Image (cartoon, rainbow, N blue to C red; front, side, top):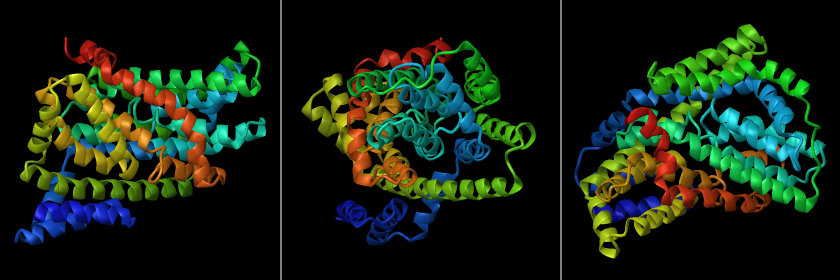
Length: 426
């Protein structure tokens, strides 16, 4: 009875738009009180959920992305991407994707990509004569590359919840992230030919060289992060500290575009964002503890295996479940709740946890592009002054290649596991 009240109260609170951390905390508190446990159990489990060394990576990756944005470093990345791929049909659409690939190696968050690069990209595309629907749609879709290519805040959370190597998760996201970018570029090329969008700039080795010189130091960030983790020089948490320190050095000492006032603003934003994420992690940990106590994972496993023992079909069912949950729940909360339920059945079927992690995160990134939650859509609506509903409609065509990549990764795990096997499992 108490467990049923827990689920019903959570659904009701989400429907009435109560913040997800509060909804998880209140519904968990209802369960604890009905079961006659002291309310301190809630706080105890929240603290345990947040007391994890790998979670320290979160504030530093957020800080690194914020420093890059505030110091104007993202404009250098955009200029280099423009020189490199702006010569093709729909050039700025390809530039949009290319810049997201680079920025993905710095921030690890789709919302940071949309909020930072998005303003630059949409303005440039408007000035070049692209319509708002195309500009917003490709900006939203390309921002989802950020949490797949390392570093990735969602992958850090998944690694903590599933007790999986974050280093393996990071390198596992490289090929899927590049596949996402390639599929979006194909869609941009097709739409550009159909709508007769212009080429942006003629290809010039001289221009590529000059913009590369201005962007070479920021471009070193993903090399430092991924190279350091893959080589074993430092952990993901230490990599996050290095990334933030490097971004601070570029902004304060090299380019001197980061003032003390900007640094203070970025620091406050980092603290606020980190606090909201950790609050979600803490309350979701309590919720996950209650699910485990009520053997939700066992019930879910028995139900799925009762339907079929076909690994492919179960993977498809898991994909559909995560896609639906991603429509209604914030990414961090969804990961914290889904992992304890999905991981046991996946292991039982021989599904690699690293493979599961990439599938779950990509599913939830697609959820960021769809109503009613659609956090990326809300950010771009604010940045572009385009109504939320129109942003959602504009993004729909770009969901096709993303879902195509999702299905490919779901049924061909070797694509995801190639680099982890090569670097970690020999």
